[in-house]
Image (tube, rainbow, N blue to C red; front, side):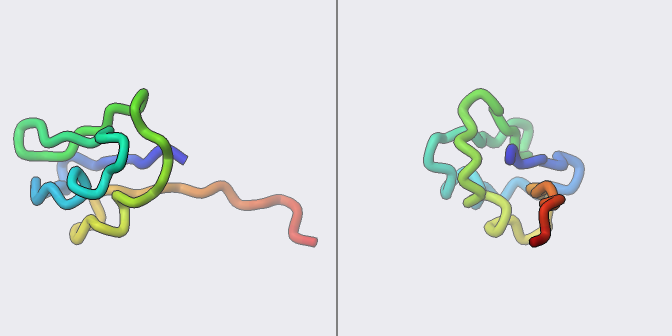
Length: 65
């Protein structure tokens, strides 16, 4: 799933940019910006965000058997 970046919460630390293998994240105007066309959906960025400005919503499985 593509991460969602809340640029209003982002503090511009750059940790997400450092761990992004395809370099889909960049700091623009001191906050993270995601270039979705480059994102490989690896999920490395979200756990690095200390202010929870990056979230990944995983769909719930309807088959619970």
